[in-house]
Amino acid sequence: MKGFVGLRYQMQRSADLETWVNLDAPFHLSQSVEIKTAAHTIEDGQFYRVREISPTNN
Image (cartoon, rainbow, N blue to C red; front, side, top):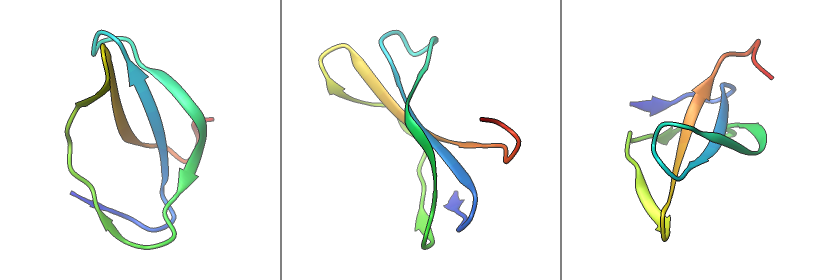
């Protein structure tokens, strides 16, 4: 999937892959990037993802 310039994205964290918590404020892409769907553990017991969000979501 390609990320699109101008769309909003949100970084999220989860301990159980079911309940996700937003980290920081949503952000926009300033240049095109390749986005891959994956969940990688960065910290012991924590998972992170970036998801596209609707322009009307806060």
